[in-house]
Length: 166
Image 1 (tube, one colour):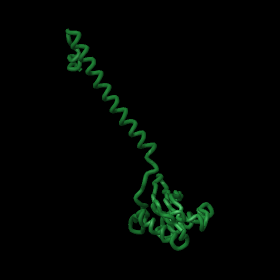
Image 2 (cartoon, rainbow, N blue to C red; image 1 turned 45 degrees about the horizontal axis):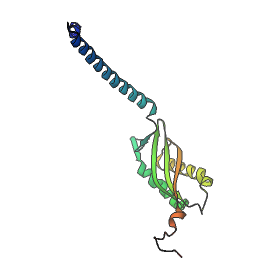
Image 3 (cartoon, helix red, strand yellow; image 1 turned 30 degrees about the vertical axis):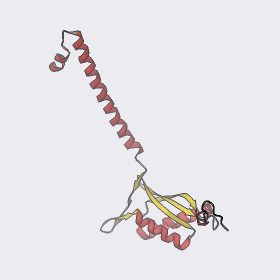
Image 4 (cartoon, rainbow, N blue to C red; image 1 turned 180 degrees about the vertical axis):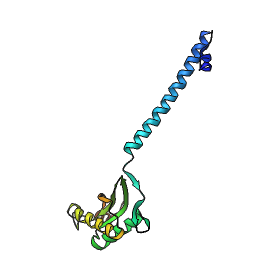
């Protein structure tokens, strides 16, 4: 403490003012650093979920089994190929929401063959049932879909500039 008081002990007022300004600046920078760290900690505590998961861990007889998102995507695509050929999943995201997971399916579908709202509940239940049956995963509770394109609009021929389609 004595060394700190020596820092301010000066007979010349210009040196005293400089020392006060320097210490004020150091305290200000330290306060900003502490504030940024506190904001980051609060953000991590409250807003870190949902976060993207690489897969789901399932308790097996002799340890934990990890099922990757690619394995889940392959299963979903095999279901769609057999039962819903007019729907194509482009991408699958698995979101971790603490104690449960949510699947987000990015997909294309053919509106000429069906209406997506009519089959969405059936499709979601079929996927959840098959994931549970195949992998034993019960922590996936929700399936959200994002529709990017309509297949029928992609299959139409596109004319180049100056050409006409017949």
